[in-house]
Length: 378
Image (tube, rainbow, N blue to C red; front, side, top):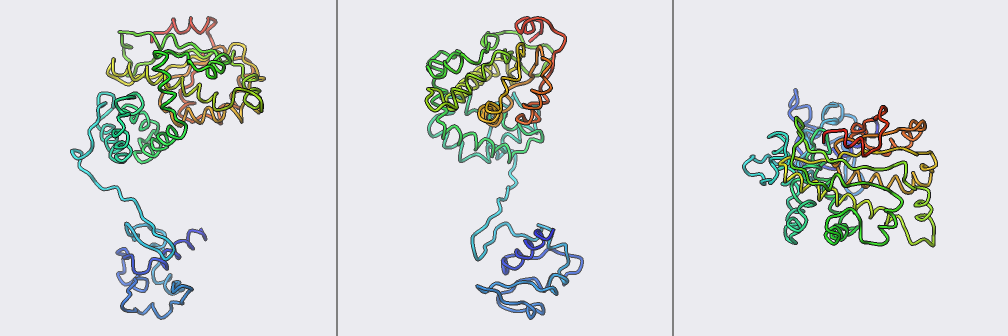
């Protein structure tokens, strides 16, 4: 409370001559705090000069002004200057819907309100999107730079916060640039869209993490009856993940595998996934998602060493959740072992609440992961 009060007093003192007070019940209440460079009011007499010509409101000023102006932003201007640096407040101008940028995935939006929010997001990102168009990336990689990917970032926030979604997308673009992710995206073209990388280093990582994307690759002509979204299953054999070996290689000083190789492998997988999801979204005319089937058969606590959790799994999950939002629709957990409660406590702090809400434990199923996929109507 003291810090807030001190900050507001400082604001009142440093922005002299650059604001107007709000209209209070008593119009004369804030008179002594109004700045006038050409004249001095009654309250001017009690001002005490500070270094560099600044002044500090005395107790009489604060008493006369009351507490409301100190804790209300209504009196602040849209832009102002200080003696130390220039500050500005971004003002979101009201724009008619007809003046907003158009979108090419209105068919994927859940409502007219979501369409407007997506168009507002494009308006906020107009400079970034202009740079993408200038180098023709939106046509070269539409699965990455289309409005459909923007929509996934918008849906990342449950309250559909346009400003937050735009900032997340800017971070996404910066991350792709710094890590040259488009070069990894190009590898997918070289391997004809398959989920097996051609790079030897990425293949080495793949041998430690058995996965099955055959169901995602299969083309289907039937929609899910009564479902508003298309879900395609992918099988992750988590119980077979050799986390001990990959962690040892990553942390070793003379290893040919580093953390960057590990992360690049998962970037390759997620880029491949989103290419398929984009193609199927266009084919079916609605947003497509991935359904993960995680088989925990053989899972042990040895796979969750402190080194793996902090040095490998943490940056891995942070990356996928930040830069590939709204990829999965559901996450099915098969054959949870007795140590699942301990493993759950280790993993959940690294997961967002949105990801946790998608997890479904399947406890009464004795078949394989393939049998589970075949038993459900996708």
